[in-house]
Amino acid sequence: MKDAAFRGVILCGGSGSRLWPLSRQLMPKQFIRLIDERSLLQHTLLRLGAICQGPPVLVCNEAHRFIVTEQADEIGLDRVEMIIEPCQRNTAPAIVAAALWAIREGDDPVILVMPSDHVLEACEALWRAFAQAYEAAQDGAMVTFGVTPTAPLTGYGYIEARRADQAEGAFPVQRFVEKPSERVARQFLKSGRYYWNSGMFAFRASVLLEEIEANAPCILEHVRAAVEAGSGAQGQYMLSHESFAECPDLSLDYAVMEHTRRAVVIPLDVSWSDVGAWDAVWGVAEKSEDGNSTTGDVLIKDSRNCLIHASARLVASIGLEDIVVVETADAVLVAHKDRAQDVKALVKTFQSQHRCELEHHREVHRPWGSYDCIGSGPRYQIKRITVKPGAKLSSQMHHHRAEHWVVVSGTARIYCGDRQYLLTENQSTYIPLGEVHSLENPGKIPLEIIEVQSGAYLGEDDIVRFDDMYGRAG
Image 1: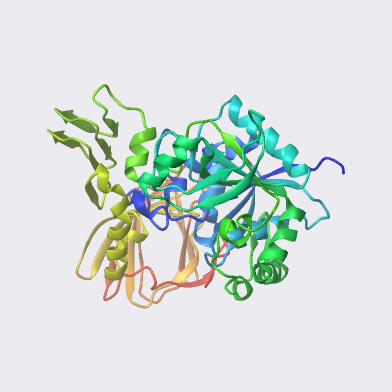
Image 2: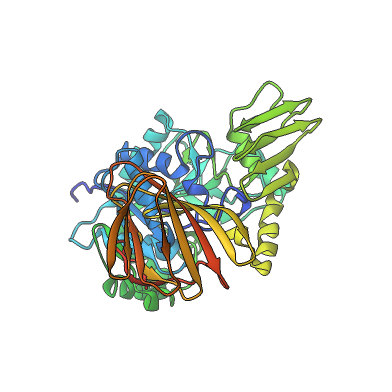
């Protein structure tokens, strides 16, 4: 059997709800700069680029595809391939879609699958484990990676290995255990046979498809139909909604790994965290002598073992211990570190109340730039809009609002009805209710304008699109 290419696959569809208010539906944790100046996704892309061949394949949802492209560009990665999920169906359908995509031209690569939102130490031990995984996958194994546990944590799944005499390598998987009690987790650590389940995998694409057909044929049937009926260009491929929505909502562990006889685990003795909650973020962050981790404009007095994140203003603390404070422009979270997992329950309450703070930040990113809602009241709303050089908003109209635009910096090309004209700094224009209009930045620097909306209804769903250079739905 000839050597297969080593292709990277990144699962990029997570929501990161336990990291609210920094993580939101339109900007989840994989795109946030949690640890340093790079996002978790950017670190994952660089990690895969160091060992895999060809452009990485990212499985993401439609709302995030432009963020993926922008963040890849920021680190000099000019080519990625995206498989766009029309709805979320867990990791098994996502990985099967990536495998079908990988073999579409007759190749049979070894695919290395990683979540996009984990913190993982890039070191010699990691590269050695990836090399071992490649060799095992070449021989037909279904490889998963088990992180050597350092504490009896109950928030992780565990993998039991059938240990042999060798000190390292791939060990047959005895069983998977979901989130044990602390008493059981302590027994696992003492035995030396158990590892944290990292959610990373390596296998030949054809081997995965054989195993999914044997153990979960319904998933293969619907994902194959979704790939065949999908469409796209320029490295972005949209799966068919009708077929993909029929897939069972199953993880790869439940669908295949717990049933296959080919499962092996390779131990990873490296620093790793899924940073699933704010206490985990504190655990991997740099800290002061008092155990405090701070980001932004923070002033601390007589406080210990706290995580304080300031985004938009000064945050000061006095006499706190083991407390998480996360401040954004429109929301503040204060919680004890021991209750960090309960943020998910808080998010469910927000869902029942239809709170917009769950979906997006005050500043909302769009493929053409961003807008920031800086003020609102009855029948009016004020936004600061930033348009990238060469970018253009969709041709659109509104049924319930009129708009005034004032250029703060840059040059704007305005399309309003059958008119087209330029505006520069300190000039303004009026867009009447019901008029078809658009806005473009023809210049070399970002365009900033102030938009004042007035009308009976100012929701973002009052947009009728007629033409859009980014392919968004009308």
